[in-house]
Image 1 (cartoon, rainbow, N blue to C red):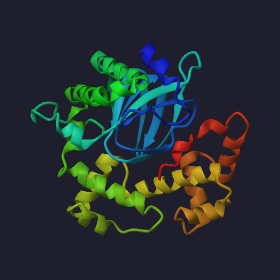
Image 2: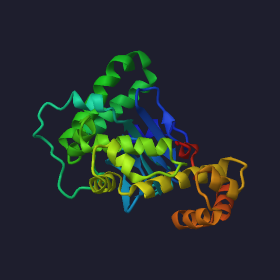
Image 3: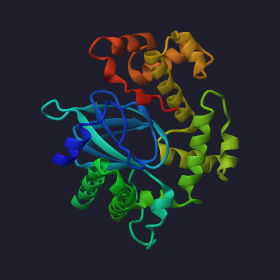
Length: 296
């Protein structure tokens, strides 16, 4: 773990490309607001608190969790005991790679009652594989051959663990998770537009009731809540990194009422838009929202 942390200290205060396929790392000090894409996320130092829909989860060093579909999340990262930055690595999930590892369909079924966003301790074998993976950052010729094999090893270790059932669902092209993934991708591409749930249910080949139920079980949100989170995350990024005023931002992200936008923004982030932006633009606080929050 110590060597892993020393390597990840090279990262920026945002998700940083490692040069290895689907592997990223982060060294963060404040917010964790962004749209998380399907990934395996391993915490190396500090803690992270994420609010995803109705669920609030806290993740500590040495634990990993899975994000099975794109989800907008808000939260905070917390430094280690000696004010050291939060450090983590991630592996973007490729269903095709996972499917090549599904030899025995009876192993690692989804555990009843387990949330899609639970964290579990990373086994020593997985941490060892991550270390060998990140060492390849300095050896690109070796990485071309070895990185795909180590990626498979990391996923294999996860398949054997308590979250293996979730990974299996990610790999199934005709499963409920894949159907909900199509719906979330559509909402992300059209998040500024009003929409009706019925066409999305048709898109996923479900009844409206079944679509609502499965969408919330996967994302911890209703479709409308999901869209609102996308809009508000985008609005916060515009407030911090653009010159638009609050009213213009409200209309840009799809709101028809600036007052409704301000109420929902304050409900999610704790302060009205202008005051929230001023807080993060204060010297010494400006790094609170990483540029990667602009993921829409």
